[in-house]
Length: 456
Image 1 (cartoon, helix red, strand yellow):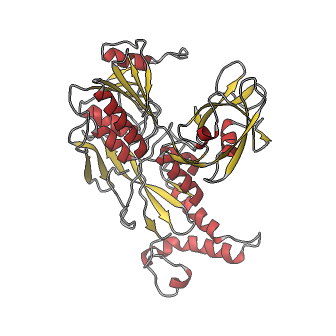
Image 2: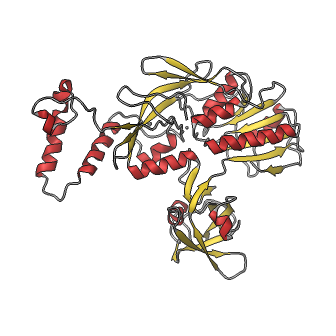
Image 3: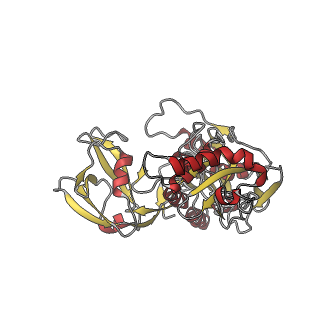
């Protein structure tokens, strides 16, 4: 299922690291990964696999190191690095002074230089982003986006999902408007078929391309032409706004005896939603709980810490190890509401569970507070620091540390091994969920007939 408007997820404060030349961070978001990336990712792809994001201001090059004549032409170059940087400055000055192919945009030159520096590391988790890409990435990991707030997918006329491209036999269908969103307020309903966007056909587009047309800045208006059942098409004008994604789904299973939470992201709002759902479960006397982080690429580490702390009374949630080998623990918060050992917990993981998801699952496994069920997790164990550049320079992220589980396991490139491994059949029969079924077996229960959706 694809959100109508956001550019998907995916961290807070494993601690608050800073490189020697970078001021200490006021905020530390954590974002996480998808499938193993190619050695060199584009910035847009790289953002889905970020781990720790720290906002800090800095100049493009280290300042305060100038010498003689070079102070005017080669600003910011330390004296000890003059020889190493000379080819760079020679190239820069030649382009700036002699290039005859057209007007030179210095900001583009600078951004290209930064991108080249980061790309040369060959690290898929370090990347440069333009100011717009940076803005979008921060929106994504916060669980917020600007748009109309609806979930859609492509559906073929034979009833199968995820067809492409859109056209007469592949329709763009609203699966649900997000509660409280502009789409819901404007009257968009589940099963509505989107025919036109601002009067233009979407035939021949992919779902992602159609989403790009529908979303947009807060305060702007988009008009959707909707087909609803057998009625004549109708037009619905929607004023875009900031939308908070629903990252937590809450249900009760096994005839109301098991609380089930599916967490798709780790924004601070998601952590609050988890606490609300846990409060409801405990008030209803439910002590068997399932936390499902399958396919969850991560989010804020502050959210991961808060969620893990609901079940862990004390001790580290994870450790951070810097380039010199120093280790600092991030301790569990002290206000957890489900730390009683009588409350049993199963955590569901798979190959899409990464970063903040692995922080939570690893903490609960090491504390022997939960049984992990499913498949090997993704394995993302490095920390990235964001460096925000001045003006419209954008930002870059750089790998500056590792994170370790409470028992100081480094799961990077390996992942977490579930306590109960579930081998999935290929293909997976429609309508089945062997991993969830195994989780219920851990509790000695079956799915039952009771399933009730709760507000989270």
